[in-house]
Length: 65
Image (cartoon, helix red, strand yellow):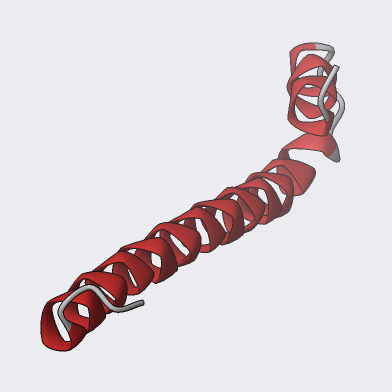
């Protein structure tokens, strides 16, 4: 069970402090997911650059490498 699910359960149980915990926890989860996505995009971008560089190098050097 995730922390957000626990907080939502507390809200259902009418815990008066639970609602104030929800937004910060959701924000942290979104930041974590964004960091993962940025990392994945950076890896893909680096791979594309390497492929383009290799292609340009092969073209310019006549496939010597």
